[in-house]
Image (tube, rainbow, N blue to C red; front, side, top):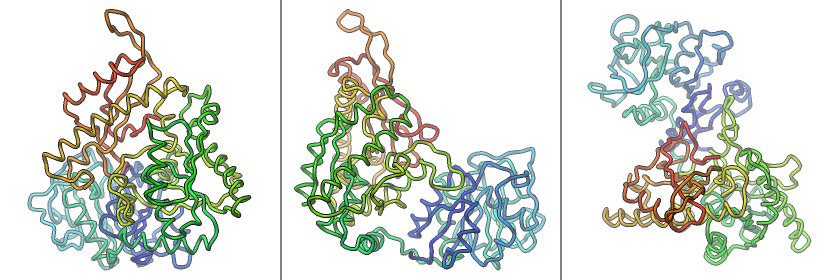
Length: 545
């Protein structure tokens, strides 16, 4: 791994742990999330020392019994440490400072000033704030406790009107802390502060790039597979496509792709997948028509997690059957290639310290224990935008690289309640209308701006990052042709995002929304109402299930 072992983001349960890792990677430095409970154990492993460590925030108070923590010896290892929010308070408390709960709390955008007001720590020089002008600056605060007294050897390097220690550091020991959140965009100088820590304090070189990643992964895949056969679970989405092309680059015809048409795809999608990957990339690809098989397994199932796990297990069973068939024809299959990415791992509870299972992704939480194949997951540590960047490095067409995400369980998790063919038809037809109208809107916008359709650089392009329809398991009364109807309501979801970890609902123009709603109601039988989802992530997820 470049830059030593990169940066560890030690997770104390903060809501921004993934975002911190994202910001480090944006500085071209590799970062991974490590649960605080595993930190000392991993440091004891030979060669496991990272170039630097960042402590996340967290919901606890450091002075409470049972609060997450690390021993004082941790700070004597000579590894640069940056504590954020709870992480800064933990460092101060463990090293002899004092953390208290004041009467005044700080949440949101707060004015920040360079140096201490009065009291201990008079040095206003700072490695973290090198090149940063705080003469008229604001940061993002979210805390109920603060550091009242810094430990011996530390200097207070910034403050706010209500927080005496907005940042502190002991540069001689490589220990730094900030009470605010530099990882969020609401702290405008935050990325520069993180870069100062990474480059000036940790000595990172910034050579974590997707070009280097692709070259490294091709070599790793070739070394791991060693001439054996790999079966790819190709869905046609961005993640599995990039994983397949990356692996094809490494092992050529030792990769066989299976496209399982589980009957839960969007309109005409199965034919499109076969056309693109069979002809354009010249891959060995077989189509398995298994719609009846999946729908029968889902019959009567309404709970979202059960749907995901059923679909995940059925995927594996199909691939095992196909691998046995191929083994008889061509020799044994040893590996199953999947397009698992980091948000899949994180949301399935595998990303850090005590992370909750938000929703099990079929390729993470739904895998059976007795699976015969070894897993090959070359993209497991990448965020969505990094996957797209790898795809561009591999020469995959922009219209495929920038294709909007589509979940592995397909329309099953956009059909709330029991999955039936009639309900799937409503989703397919309404979704096709939605995509047609938003695509037309986007193309007109890009033409006006003079931007390339899949450039991925303008805010306008990112504004509608993912869009689809869902079918809530509800019906409502309507009037069509002077007659009473009692039909389904269709939900429209459109969000803007970069990596899928957070998102905002897309501010589509009213005339576009009116056209979408009118077409769905008029053209899709069984629908008499259209709803628009105005929920951000968090608190919602992008998908409804």
